[in-house]
Image (tube, rainbow, N blue to C red):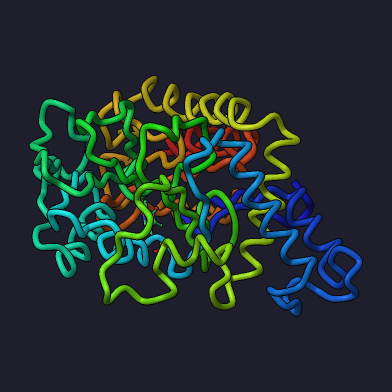
Length: 362
Ligand SMILES: *Cc1c(COP(=O)(O)O)cnc(C)c1O
């Protein structure tokens, strides 16, 4: 870590690899020999065109995206997609199945309701405060649905799907905002994968979408032009001025991930980091892991003590130890350590050392 920087456990926007920040700094005033910053550059310029194409090519390579899928960059973050997806693909039966596993999947369903005939709740684990992911046998899916929507990694609650739901041919749509590029994914099992980029990819202001070709061109007439997936695909995601800076950082981050060995290597590191924390949590009884073991997230580790006052004291002590953003989300309480790709193993080791010290003192 560069002097003065701290281990930032923020759920998003979150840490970016230092090598990427340094590269951006190096190119900040003069990008690609253009004599200007990306911040000042026309999105119609050759330099920017090369950047967006490289970003897309990198995503395709790194995630092994099949030929019959398109890659889009869209305005509005993940929440924008909660509306854009029903508008674009909810036009067959007008019915969609939502599997509710936390706050964001619920928000997606509420937004879907505005545009769909029916935004069905196919399963929910709200009764256990989302401490686990619904199981395949709990899914009450409708065969006529236009799509099934899931939130792959529940950023707030700290759970993740460990299986790919079987939907009998109905396109599976996954919000992967907080797990995108953390490990390999079989893209061919999904109709749409989308993500707000500010967790594991870039600064905020952008959604990445990977969409199967046959889902393009079905949109409702009311769909805003900037969110018509088919049009954005035709226009190389530049119907209007796109968020150029986040797209540029997506390019740098994906360049970096490929240099580092791609998603197999990211998975190896992320499993190693998460195991350090979970093994420690399982080895003692001062801290309590807040979710079911089988569904634990690799990216967002949630835990608490038996006493909310102690949780407060733990969070209050973080700055003195060189950490930030360890406070849990208000829906869960306690603590949350978000350990995306850019969090070094040393950051997790330092956190565990603090946890041990705090437990011993209390
Ligand atoms: C952060 C997050 C969102 C919200 O993203 P925005 O880009 O702010 O709309 C949605 N879903 C998941 C899983 C998230 O982690």
